[in-house]
Image (cartoon, rainbow, N blue to C red):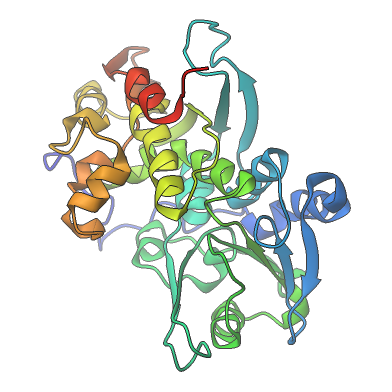
Length: 350
Protein backbone atom coordinates (compact mmCIF):
# COMPACT_ATOMS: atom_id res chain seq x y z
CA UNK A 1 0.00 0.00 0.00
CA UNK A 2 2.88 2.31 -0.78
CA UNK A 3 0.56 4.76 -2.55
CA UNK A 4 -1.14 5.65 0.75
CA UNK A 5 0.46 8.52 2.69
CA UNK A 6 2.49 7.61 5.76
CA UNK A 7 1.11 8.45 9.18
CA UNK A 8 4.24 10.43 9.99
CA UNK A 9 4.69 14.04 8.91
CA UNK A 10 7.18 16.37 10.53
CA UNK A 11 4.81 19.30 9.90
CA UNK A 12 1.89 17.82 11.83
CA UNK A 13 1.22 16.75 15.38
CA UNK A 14 1.36 12.94 15.85
CA UNK A 15 -2.22 11.60 15.85
CA UNK A 16 -2.43 10.43 19.48
CA UNK A 17 -0.27 13.06 21.17
CA UNK A 18 -3.20 14.64 23.00
CA UNK A 19 -5.03 11.49 24.05
CA UNK A 20 -6.24 11.71 27.69
CA UNK A 21 -6.61 7.92 27.90
CA UNK A 22 -4.27 6.10 30.28
CA UNK A 23 -3.85 2.42 29.46
CA UNK A 24 -2.20 1.73 32.82
CA UNK A 25 -5.02 3.40 34.74
CA UNK A 26 -7.72 1.71 32.67
CA UNK A 27 -6.23 -1.73 33.28
CA UNK A 28 -6.29 -1.56 37.08
CA UNK A 29 -9.75 -3.13 37.60
CA UNK A 30 -8.76 -6.02 35.33
CA UNK A 31 -5.50 -6.57 37.15
CA UNK A 32 -7.31 -6.48 40.50
CA UNK A 33 -9.73 -9.10 39.22
CA UNK A 34 -6.82 -11.33 38.19
CA UNK A 35 -5.31 -10.97 41.66
CA UNK A 36 -8.61 -11.44 43.53
CA UNK A 37 -9.53 -14.54 41.51
CA UNK A 38 -6.06 -16.08 41.41
CA UNK A 39 -7.15 -19.40 42.90
CA UNK A 40 -10.17 -19.68 40.63
CA UNK A 41 -8.09 -18.82 37.57
CA UNK A 42 -5.27 -21.16 38.67
CA UNK A 43 -2.54 -18.50 38.67
CA UNK A 44 0.02 -17.81 41.37
CA UNK A 45 0.83 -14.35 42.70
CA UNK A 46 4.15 -13.57 44.38
CA UNK A 47 7.05 -11.12 44.45
CA UNK A 48 10.64 -11.20 43.30
CA UNK A 49 13.51 -10.18 45.55
CA UNK A 50 13.08 -6.50 44.67
CA UNK A 51 9.37 -6.39 45.51
CA UNK A 52 7.98 -6.48 41.95
CA UNK A 53 4.71 -8.43 41.78
CA UNK A 54 4.98 -11.57 39.63
CA UNK A 55 1.87 -13.34 38.31
CA UNK A 56 2.64 -16.86 37.11
CA UNK A 57 -0.07 -17.84 34.61
CA UNK A 58 1.47 -21.02 33.23
CA UNK A 59 5.00 -21.88 34.47
CA UNK A 60 4.61 -23.50 37.91
CA UNK A 61 0.92 -22.58 38.03
CA UNK A 62 -1.41 -24.41 35.59
CA UNK A 63 -3.26 -21.26 34.50
CA UNK A 64 -6.51 -21.44 32.52
CA UNK A 65 -8.31 -20.25 29.42
CA UNK A 66 -10.26 -17.82 31.60
CA UNK A 67 -6.98 -16.37 32.86
CA UNK A 68 -5.81 -16.00 29.27
CA UNK A 69 -8.98 -14.10 28.35
CA UNK A 70 -8.39 -11.70 31.24
CA UNK A 71 -4.69 -11.33 30.39
CA UNK A 72 -5.73 -10.58 26.81
CA UNK A 73 -7.83 -7.66 28.04
CA UNK A 74 -5.00 -6.53 30.30
CA UNK A 75 -2.66 -6.58 27.31
CA UNK A 76 -5.12 -4.25 25.54
CA UNK A 77 -4.76 -1.72 28.33
CA UNK A 78 -8.39 -1.95 29.37
CA UNK A 79 -9.45 -0.51 26.00
CA UNK A 80 -10.62 -3.76 24.42
CA UNK A 81 -12.81 -6.76 25.14
CA UNK A 82 -11.95 -10.44 24.78
CA UNK A 83 -14.54 -13.18 25.19
CA UNK A 84 -15.10 -16.85 24.41
CA UNK A 85 -17.67 -17.79 21.80
CA UNK A 86 -18.86 -21.32 21.01
CA UNK A 87 -18.62 -22.38 17.35
CA UNK A 88 -17.57 -18.97 16.02
CA UNK A 89 -20.31 -16.53 15.06
CA UNK A 90 -22.84 -19.08 16.30
CA UNK A 91 -22.27 -21.26 13.25
CA UNK A 92 -22.33 -24.94 14.21
CA UNK A 93 -20.71 -25.82 10.88
CA UNK A 94 -17.66 -23.62 11.49
CA UNK A 95 -15.49 -26.67 12.08
CA UNK A 96 -13.98 -25.71 15.44
CA UNK A 97 -15.79 -25.59 18.79
CA UNK A 98 -14.26 -22.58 20.57
CA UNK A 99 -13.43 -19.11 19.27
CA UNK A 100 -12.22 -15.87 20.75
CA UNK A 101 -13.95 -12.60 19.92
CA UNK A 102 -12.03 -9.35 20.31
CA UNK A 103 -13.28 -5.79 19.95
CA UNK A 104 -12.16 -2.24 20.64
CA UNK A 105 -13.49 1.26 20.11
CA UNK A 106 -9.90 2.50 20.56
CA UNK A 107 -8.13 -0.10 18.39
CA UNK A 108 -4.89 1.79 17.77
CA UNK A 109 -4.20 2.55 21.42
CA UNK A 110 -5.46 -0.84 22.62
CA UNK A 111 -3.57 -2.89 20.05
CA UNK A 112 -0.45 -0.94 19.08
CA UNK A 113 0.20 1.28 22.11
CA UNK A 114 -0.45 -1.57 24.54
CA UNK A 115 -1.03 -5.12 23.25
CA UNK A 116 1.67 -5.32 20.58
CA UNK A 117 4.69 -7.33 21.75
CA UNK A 118 7.20 -4.71 20.70
CA UNK A 119 9.53 -4.10 23.65
CA UNK A 120 12.68 -6.17 23.28
CA UNK A 121 14.06 -7.28 26.65
CA UNK A 122 17.18 -9.42 26.84
CA UNK A 123 20.08 -10.43 29.07
CA UNK A 124 23.33 -12.16 28.22
CA UNK A 125 24.27 -15.52 29.68
CA UNK A 126 26.49 -13.76 32.21
CA UNK A 127 23.82 -11.20 33.15
CA UNK A 128 21.12 -13.86 33.46
CA UNK A 129 23.16 -16.26 35.57
CA UNK A 130 24.00 -18.98 33.08
CA UNK A 131 21.29 -18.91 30.40
CA UNK A 132 20.46 -16.13 27.98
CA UNK A 133 17.10 -14.46 28.42
CA UNK A 134 14.94 -12.89 25.73
CA UNK A 135 11.35 -11.75 25.63
CA UNK A 136 9.17 -9.25 23.81
CA UNK A 137 7.20 -7.27 26.36
CA UNK A 138 3.56 -6.43 25.72
CA UNK A 139 0.92 -4.59 27.68
CA UNK A 140 0.36 -1.09 29.03
CA UNK A 141 3.76 -0.57 30.71
CA UNK A 142 5.19 -0.18 27.19
CA UNK A 143 3.45 3.20 27.05
CA UNK A 144 5.30 4.35 30.16
CA UNK A 145 8.72 3.47 28.75
CA UNK A 146 8.03 4.55 25.16
CA UNK A 147 11.24 2.88 23.96
CA UNK A 148 9.92 1.80 20.57
CA UNK A 149 9.90 3.94 17.42
CA UNK A 150 6.18 3.25 17.15
CA UNK A 151 5.48 5.55 20.09
CA UNK A 152 7.17 8.45 18.32
CA UNK A 153 4.89 7.91 15.36
CA UNK A 154 1.78 7.66 17.50
CA UNK A 155 2.87 10.52 19.72
CA UNK A 156 1.37 8.65 22.64
CA UNK A 157 2.79 8.37 26.15
CA UNK A 158 0.61 7.22 29.01
CA UNK A 159 -0.63 10.44 30.73
CA UNK A 160 -1.16 8.72 34.09
CA UNK A 161 -0.58 11.09 37.00
CA UNK A 162 2.65 10.66 38.95
CA UNK A 163 0.74 10.05 42.19
CA UNK A 164 -1.15 7.17 40.56
CA UNK A 165 1.73 5.71 38.57
CA UNK A 166 1.74 1.93 38.10
CA UNK A 167 2.45 -0.44 35.24
CA UNK A 168 1.73 -3.95 33.95
CA UNK A 169 3.91 -5.86 31.49
CA UNK A 170 3.18 -9.30 29.99
CA UNK A 171 6.04 -11.62 29.01
CA UNK A 172 5.66 -14.83 26.97
CA UNK A 173 8.35 -16.77 28.84
CA UNK A 174 8.86 -20.10 30.59
CA UNK A 175 10.94 -18.64 33.42
CA UNK A 176 11.01 -15.47 35.47
CA UNK A 177 13.10 -12.61 34.05
CA UNK A 178 16.53 -12.08 35.66
CA UNK A 179 17.04 -9.06 37.95
CA UNK A 180 18.89 -7.09 35.26
CA UNK A 181 15.78 -7.20 33.02
CA UNK A 182 13.45 -6.28 35.88
CA UNK A 183 15.71 -3.36 36.79
CA UNK A 184 15.63 -2.13 33.19
CA UNK A 185 11.82 -2.22 33.11
CA UNK A 186 11.61 -0.30 36.37
CA UNK A 187 14.15 2.28 35.22
CA UNK A 188 12.64 2.83 31.77
CA UNK A 189 9.08 3.01 33.12
CA UNK A 190 10.01 5.26 36.03
CA UNK A 191 8.43 2.89 38.54
CA UNK A 192 9.25 1.69 42.02
CA UNK A 193 9.17 -2.10 42.51
CA UNK A 194 5.81 -2.06 44.29
CA UNK A 195 4.29 -0.22 41.29
CA UNK A 196 5.14 -2.88 38.68
CA UNK A 197 3.35 -6.15 37.90
CA UNK A 198 4.86 -8.73 35.53
CA UNK A 199 2.52 -11.40 34.13
CA UNK A 200 4.28 -14.52 32.80
CA UNK A 201 2.42 -16.59 30.18
CA UNK A 202 4.36 -19.33 28.34
CA UNK A 203 2.86 -19.91 24.89
CA UNK A 204 2.65 -23.61 25.74
CA UNK A 205 0.02 -23.02 28.41
CA UNK A 206 -3.72 -22.47 28.45
CA UNK A 207 -3.40 -18.79 29.36
CA UNK A 208 -0.48 -18.23 26.99
CA UNK A 209 -2.21 -19.79 23.99
CA UNK A 210 -5.37 -17.81 24.71
CA UNK A 211 -3.74 -14.40 25.13
CA UNK A 212 -1.70 -14.85 21.93
CA UNK A 213 -4.75 -15.79 19.83
CA UNK A 214 -6.48 -12.74 21.35
CA UNK A 215 -4.01 -10.68 19.29
CA UNK A 216 -6.01 -11.30 16.12
CA UNK A 217 -7.17 -7.65 15.93
CA UNK A 218 -3.69 -6.39 16.81
CA UNK A 219 -2.20 -8.41 13.93
CA UNK A 220 -4.56 -6.61 11.55
CA UNK A 221 -3.63 -3.20 13.00
CA UNK A 222 0.08 -3.99 12.71
CA UNK A 223 -0.35 -5.11 9.10
CA UNK A 224 -2.31 -1.93 8.30
CA UNK A 225 0.58 0.03 9.79
CA UNK A 226 3.07 -1.87 7.63
CA UNK A 227 0.92 -1.01 4.60
CA UNK A 228 1.16 2.69 5.59
CA UNK A 229 -2.56 3.09 6.11
CA UNK A 230 -3.10 6.18 8.34
CA UNK A 231 -3.61 4.74 11.81
CA UNK A 232 -5.74 7.69 12.94
CA UNK A 233 -8.27 6.68 10.26
CA UNK A 234 -8.97 3.32 11.97
CA UNK A 235 -11.81 4.05 14.38
CA UNK A 236 -13.21 0.65 15.39
CA UNK A 237 -12.28 -3.00 15.18
CA UNK A 238 -13.91 -6.39 15.73
CA UNK A 239 -12.21 -9.76 15.23
CA UNK A 240 -12.41 -13.47 15.96
CA UNK A 241 -10.18 -16.53 15.74
CA UNK A 242 -10.45 -20.22 16.68
CA UNK A 243 -8.79 -21.22 19.95
CA UNK A 244 -6.61 -24.36 19.69
CA UNK A 245 -5.42 -26.49 22.55
CA UNK A 246 -1.84 -25.68 23.64
CA UNK A 247 0.95 -27.27 21.61
CA UNK A 248 3.06 -30.19 22.78
CA UNK A 249 6.20 -28.03 22.85
CA UNK A 250 7.23 -24.43 22.31
CA UNK A 251 7.49 -24.67 18.52
CA UNK A 252 4.16 -26.46 18.20
CA UNK A 253 2.51 -23.91 20.49
CA UNK A 254 3.90 -20.99 18.48
CA UNK A 255 2.75 -22.66 15.27
CA UNK A 256 -0.79 -23.21 16.52
CA UNK A 257 -1.29 -19.67 17.80
CA UNK A 258 0.02 -18.16 14.58
CA UNK A 259 -2.05 -20.51 12.42
CA UNK A 260 -5.20 -19.59 14.36
CA UNK A 261 -4.82 -16.02 13.15
CA UNK A 262 -3.22 -16.54 9.72
CA UNK A 263 -5.78 -19.15 8.62
CA UNK A 264 -8.71 -18.62 11.01
CA UNK A 265 -8.64 -14.92 11.90
CA UNK A 266 -11.54 -12.73 10.80
CA UNK A 267 -11.39 -8.95 11.21
CA UNK A 268 -13.67 -6.01 10.44
CA UNK A 269 -12.16 -2.54 10.55
CA UNK A 270 -14.23 0.62 10.39
CA UNK A 271 -12.23 3.45 8.87
CA UNK A 272 -12.40 7.08 7.84
CA UNK A 273 -10.89 8.50 4.68
CA UNK A 274 -11.46 7.85 0.99
CA UNK A 275 -13.04 4.74 -0.48
CA UNK A 276 -10.00 3.99 -2.63
CA UNK A 277 -7.74 3.67 0.41
CA UNK A 278 -10.28 1.52 2.25
CA UNK A 279 -10.74 -0.81 -0.72
CA UNK A 280 -6.99 -1.15 -1.19
CA UNK A 281 -6.53 -1.91 2.52
CA UNK A 282 -9.08 -4.73 2.29
CA UNK A 283 -7.37 -6.12 -0.79
CA UNK A 284 -3.82 -6.08 0.60
CA UNK A 285 -4.50 -7.01 4.23
CA UNK A 286 -5.23 -10.80 4.21
CA UNK A 287 -2.52 -13.41 4.79
CA UNK A 288 -3.17 -15.20 1.49
CA UNK A 289 -1.26 -12.39 -0.25
CA UNK A 290 1.94 -13.91 1.12
CA UNK A 291 4.18 -16.21 -0.89
CA UNK A 292 4.51 -18.34 2.28
CA UNK A 293 0.76 -18.86 2.64
CA UNK A 294 -0.60 -22.41 2.66
CA UNK A 295 1.56 -24.30 5.18
CA UNK A 296 1.47 -24.55 8.93
CA UNK A 297 3.53 -21.83 10.58
CA UNK A 298 5.76 -24.30 12.43
CA UNK A 299 6.78 -25.81 9.07
CA UNK A 300 7.36 -22.37 7.58
CA UNK A 301 9.52 -21.40 10.55
CA UNK A 302 11.62 -24.56 10.25
CA UNK A 303 12.10 -23.99 6.52
CA UNK A 304 13.25 -20.44 7.32
CA UNK A 305 15.93 -21.92 9.60
CA UNK A 306 14.11 -20.51 12.64
CA UNK A 307 14.70 -16.94 11.42
CA UNK A 308 11.58 -14.75 11.45
CA UNK A 309 13.25 -12.30 9.08
CA UNK A 310 13.35 -14.94 6.34
CA UNK A 311 9.56 -15.27 6.43
CA UNK A 312 7.53 -13.06 4.09
CA UNK A 313 6.14 -10.26 6.26
CA UNK A 314 2.87 -10.30 4.31
CA UNK A 315 2.02 -13.59 6.02
CA UNK A 316 1.50 -11.96 9.42
CA UNK A 317 -2.13 -10.97 8.89
CA UNK A 318 -5.63 -12.29 9.50
CA UNK A 319 -7.14 -14.74 7.04
CA UNK A 320 -10.29 -12.81 6.16
CA UNK A 321 -11.08 -9.10 6.39
CA UNK A 322 -13.87 -6.61 5.94
CA UNK A 323 -13.10 -2.89 5.73
CA UNK A 324 -16.05 -0.53 6.17
CA UNK A 325 -16.02 3.17 5.34
CA UNK A 326 -17.57 5.45 7.94
CA UNK A 327 -18.25 8.14 5.32
CA UNK A 328 -19.68 6.22 2.37
CA UNK A 329 -21.11 3.21 4.21
CA UNK A 330 -19.44 0.83 1.77
CA UNK A 331 -17.73 -2.38 2.88
CA UNK A 332 -15.03 -4.34 1.06
CA UNK A 333 -14.24 -8.00 1.73
CA UNK A 334 -11.14 -10.03 0.91
CA UNK A 335 -9.39 -13.22 1.97
CA UNK A 336 -10.91 -16.44 3.27
CA UNK A 337 -10.69 -18.86 6.16
CA UNK A 338 -8.71 -22.07 5.72
CA UNK A 339 -10.24 -24.26 8.40
CA UNK A 340 -9.27 -27.42 6.54
CA UNK A 341 -5.61 -26.57 7.16
CA UNK A 342 -6.33 -25.89 10.82
CA UNK A 343 -8.26 -29.11 11.33
CA UNK A 344 -5.44 -31.01 9.65
CA UNK A 345 -2.99 -29.47 12.12
CA UNK A 346 -5.12 -29.65 15.28
CA UNK A 347 -7.67 -32.47 14.99
CA UNK A 348 -7.09 -36.21 15.46
CA UNK A 349 -9.62 -38.84 14.47
CA UNK A 350 -11.57 -40.40 17.34
